[in-house]
Length: 322
Length: 204
Image 1 (cartoon, rainbow over the protein chains, first blue to last red):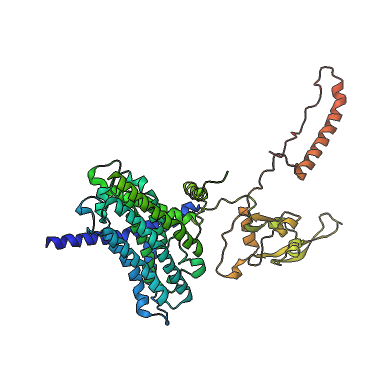
Image 2 (cartoon, rainbow over the protein chains, first blue to last red):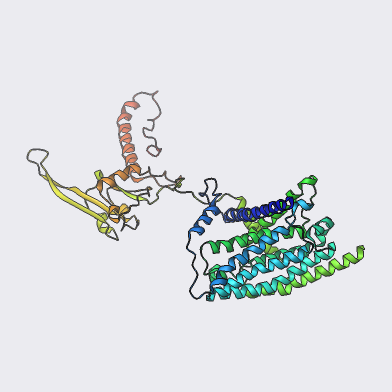
């Protein structure tokens, strides 16, 4: 009985994080983006500096009619937002925020495998939406999503493999237990490749060619309204949390930090994740969208070779220090 | 020297970060009134005491948005045997702000200073017909007309003041000329008359 309670509590906490953190990131994006453009951003909803803007947005989305186009593949069309959103919830379960059993939703031995495989499923949601909408823009968006997935999954996996090699384990807490501070310069190239490829996988600007709202009208999401569209948006922001959390765990040492007591490791994890999330927003505000061919070129001619070089470096250093 | 690869990317990041730390340019208008410059073209006020119904404004208006009605009155002679005089009396003066394009030609062309710009701009209506402001409303706007901004430091003297000063100087010279013979009789008098008019007078 106690075990069941424990599991329920863990699931509840992870679910709570899953519901609140994306909103915090979204609100931060509203405000940071506005100030980076010399604006104020939302100021009214909730009274104090528009803190409840996303709550108001959610209420608006919930009120909207749920429309399914007549030509659409009804079941797939309605299922797609859930397929896009749920994988991130599952990944969140496996990310450790502190040392020990108590600070992770579920310890998974093959953590990296699980996390990367499930994250790949999230992109399927966009593909399903793009195909099932029976819309030219959606189809274009879906195809671009597929091309981007193919291009960026590879460097991401290679970069993650490099860390697994360095630690000698594929368990996420195991990697963190083996972490030393000098891994940071050692794996820095892999970290950058992982982060950039992750951004591309989330279709965040500047890699948002598949959803490019100014040319193909949000790509795969063209036909979506109301709650289902909101779920896609939530998936994007949950994806940011997951990507930043994973980068923190794999490359930035998670709960390890230069200062702080033993019990405060989770503060370090959250802090690093928050800084990375800010970086995601910052990159979005700063850079224009990459063209489709530039996007492919960046992956195949830069990120893949870099990640291979990182693996080679990891292997050499590993052999030398043994 | 070739630029370091990626320096452009870093520059871009620096620009957005710097903008984030600066003050925003957003004006929170309904909560905070805008800080309008003098000579803002908000609404046109009519100083009807100055209006002579010369109709110049109505005729120059490019979109014919000024309506003027008047009638002629005869004023009896002021002195016995004198001539009767006639003058125009304003019956209606209206500006249709749904037609007005705020060119300000009527204000420029008015020879009697009867029309003025006011910076007030919050007179939106739910019925387009209410945008035709009749003379009482136009007269009310006059209370919102700000004092004219001060002249630039090196600007030419205003014509009215220049004329007044010239007259005053002429008068002073004539008085001095009259006083001069009387003064010359006394050997220990003041060397000359002091300037009766401040040359800066009227500008302060």
